[in-house]
Amino acid sequence: MYSPKELSNKTCVVGIGETTYSRKSGMTDLTLQLTAAMRAIEDAGIKPGDIDGILPQAAGATSEDFATNLGIKDLRYSAQINMGGASPCAAIQNGVLAVASGVCNYVLLLSGRNGYSGARTAQSIGAGLGSGPMRTMGEFEYIYGLVAPMLWYGPMARRHMHLYGTTSLQFAEVSIAMRRHASMQSNAQMKDPITIEDHQSSPILADPFRLLDCCLQTDGAAACVITTPERAKDLKKKPVYISAFGEAHPDSPSSITQRPDMTTFGIAKLAPRVFEMAGMTPKDVDVAELYDCFTFTVINQLEDIGFCGKGEGGPFVEGGRIQIGGDLPVNTHGGLLSQGHIMGMNHVIEGIKQVRGSSDVQVKDAEVALVSGYGDFGDGALAIFSGR
Amino acid sequence: MTTTSEYKKPIPRPTGESQPFWDFCKKHELRFQRCSKCNTFRHYPRPLCGECGSFDFDWVQVAPKGTVHSWVTAHRAFHPGFAEELPLAIVIVDVDEAPGIRIMANYNDGTKADEVAVGAPVKIVFDDVTEEFTLPKIARA
Image 1 (cartoon, rainbow over the protein chains, first blue to last red):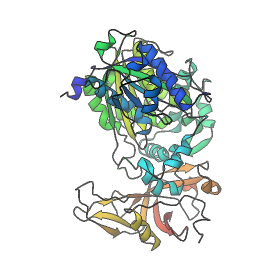
Image 2: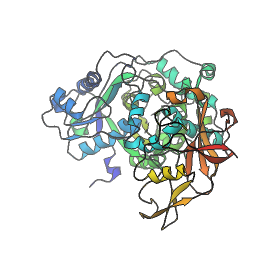
Image 3: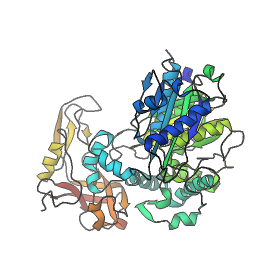
Image 4: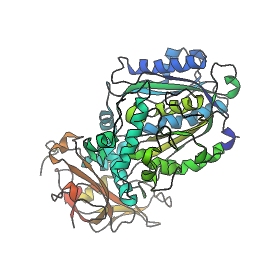
């Protein structure tokens, strides 16, 4: 049996693929996801039928769809994680376990959807409130108008502002950093640079959140292939090692309202485990791709991961510290706020690109990239990629 | 009082566990589950005490008083039923006599969103929104 630490660097990513991030893909959800999958498979230098594990983290396509389309004769493992936007990053754990245990040779992890031209999040949430992880919220909170994610997380942000003096101007620092990075990326939805004034004059949608605190809705998909370092030796690309991984859930996981401290996410529990698994500390991280459904979410994760102390996330993001060239560049792809929203699979891809040295917004000599996922009511996931 | 078909906002969809909570609200009683073994309050309603693992509980009545823990103000109608009440404060309230328990509510005394503050005391009141359902709401204490 493996201990978690023994699983560090036992697996690696050998292929990545993305579609264009846009408002109108012109493809079905399935074709969109298959396009990303085929690009990842080609990047890895394997055949579609070599895939024997599938982790599809989005609606609109099942493992069976992928097995049929990719010509997989012997699909040995499939799993869909029910953690909202944390699912793609959390599914890395499934991929590692499937490959390291020998159950699978090549696991395909992917996410994607027509999130703009197809079904919008607010619609799918309205439909989902009767069952599943949102049922309780549907019964006790939806009835007071708490419908959209910006309303779910608004009270968390407000509480953080109350406890620690965090400000909307600090939220703006996150927003302009993501946009600056997207403006330098070849594949991003929103490329026009913005200023603090632009942020402060954008309309308030769910106080304390303004328009420019909120993520995009996107048509797009991305995928990666996980295998062992031994198999990677025969493949095209230099492997990117999975040095640590994991999923986490906050106290009171189905209700933010009932959570003792609504400013502490699940990853606060996970971060020490992940750094121990990798044999690293936050100081070893060269670049961080942090799930940014809202600006506040980035600030709170910086604290819960341990890049700064609790309550210090607001001052931490000031002065360009999280921009390229700063102490800790965050979301070099532009994030959900400016590149596109495919449930954070683009964060996973960007972390891999940084270690490969192939990002359009490359952090010089980056060796270690940390990626986070965040979903539902505070669920989280982390992964650390390294070149070893 | 409106009939359920005239009420334009979402209504609760109770389960076997939560139905008593709504039945007590209809009688204008604020009651929460409290573990019979370890006396820990819990909400939202559920079968098992996460502290001690007991299925046994009582529905304990508490004073309808609380304190604002946090809130968010909707400036857009994310559901059409709330369109005429914007900006709408959606408030999370610590219930004074049930440690660790919070409720979500809207003000129903005309309190404006910009008058809400963390730590403000509130009264918990009951609004008979339909023939079938009564919702806890809040008013300035």
